[in-house]
Length: 115
Length: 115
Image 1: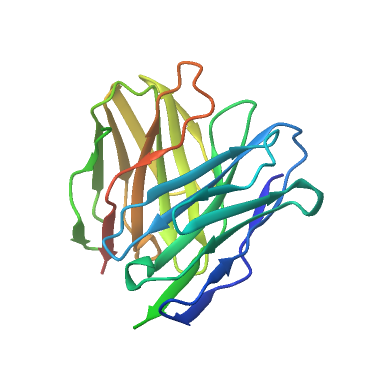
Image 2 (image 1 turned 30 degrees about the horizontal axis):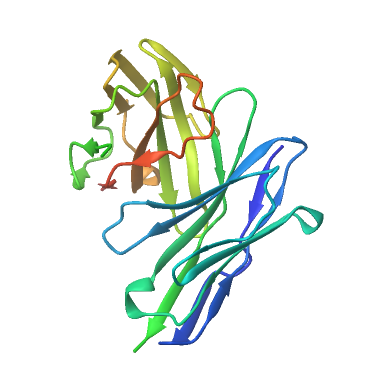
């Protein structure tokens, strides 16, 4: 069975601080994909990044960066110099490379950036 | 851009009513999904479909059914709505067609309240 754990239910930081959102996953598959989605107050999930299990390179996109470590089954997300617009619920998700394309989601982390 | 639309943003129904939630995607995607989102539980898969008239149960199918008569449309049906089905419902789609690496594209969600 697959499982994604986001232990941080809510985080609040002051604007311009850096913040890291944790994601730990469990799977028996050797090939899988990991995702991060952002859900702003409007409700629609916005895709942020996809990473496959063979690619452990860290990814940076502007103020966003992701650290994928297979050894600890973690796929953490860091926002540098946070802004109020980053306030949202963030979901980490896992998908097997086999069978159907079902996503297993974590329970989400609500991030609040305080101006 | 892929567009996934849902028939209503907000819906209020009475216990025992039959409820239809409609989802339409405009990118000829093969796979479509219905999730419900509840605080502290993240997104949970109700049903998904990988082709017209094909459907598979997700993690929490009880109390729900689905219909996919056309490729672009995937309907979620609550045969007899109950208060514990009050939730946010999210529809998603993926290309399928061998593109196993694709992210899921989400609609804006329908917030259903059953009184």
